[in-house]
Image (cartoon, rainbow, N blue to C red; front, side, top):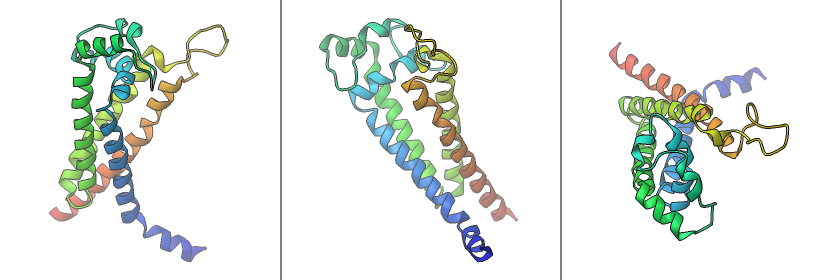
Length: 187
């Protein structure tokens, strides 16, 4: 068993690079989806209710509730409202930024300085995303008659958001690795 642990202990460098690759894949995929209307429509409750991001939209919360399309649904008047709300423009910009962050994290394999920048941006992005648990009412199961609603009952949106704890933790590991590499170059 000791031999196996010694071999596994040497996987640290490989495992951190696999973490960087994983974060990149998630960022590239999620960022890429931001260019599609269904994903842009889906983030509206988060952005509209966020004190950090709501100013990007033309209309205030909770007006969006009357114009939500379900995933896979097309209601033309709702799409027009989202266009006037700047939903798609903001989502495209956000998607580009998320892809950029993913690329910076991935570049940490080759450049600790660039990787550190990507890790810091991932940490900030994760903290903003996690703040949606506090600011977005749709993060919690609504009171529709069942006794199981509100905190701690996460809705589908809330379950999506809470997973950013893993992204936050992974970014901290990547930042630590980049910092160690940068410090070792100075010694």
